[in-house]
Image: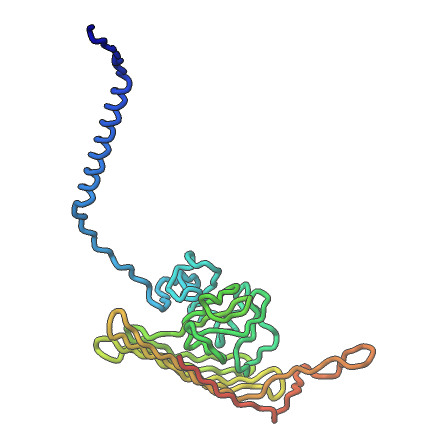
Length: 314
């Protein structure tokens, strides 16, 4: 009996083999790309270019960019010598030329020409703090000199400019009032000899004389000094009122290197006089006014004289 044979035909499916070949090709391509990326990442990195250092401006303001009454930069608000256009807050600058042209002897006389500043009505020549002004409607109790808290009346003989900060700025300017504050920049000696002698006369026997001189000390001009003095004496429209003031001061600058500067600023003054106190024209009558008092009457008699000594060092 012949053996029986079972035939099982094998069917060829070309789609299965085609898909397998595509998968194999894709896998090999991905592996090759990975090997190429790995080989590329191991290549030595190109040398980095040398970075250029960033040079910040000096912590001082220069009047070289000023053009008459127009100032180009300021140090208040950021403590850097920055252009006024780049500052994040409004700052007004009263230049030295403007102060000299109006003949201001005290900072308060120059602040009257600012749009946001006004006198609070209680300032006197013998005021100790020198902070009697309003800024944007808020009374200011603080003022600064070269970025540091300042007390006392500053004579314009030793002031190069006044920077008025409008609005709150305690982040960069320290403790100030909501309306803002002022920052007075002192005069500094220049590289060449310069100076002036000035005499002024005015109403009520006003007399003022001042001397200012700046010079380098050494031949290399690394050490420079500025010194000055002023004497002022005048009367008043009120009886017995008057004032005599003597001011001395100076500034010393030492620059051992191009990037290092050490400075000392000083001012000392004495004030003697009788304060002018206007009469009170009100009374308890029906009219409420007293009409028989002279305008020259001073409620502060000759015995109410005062003597004040002020000194500032920074």
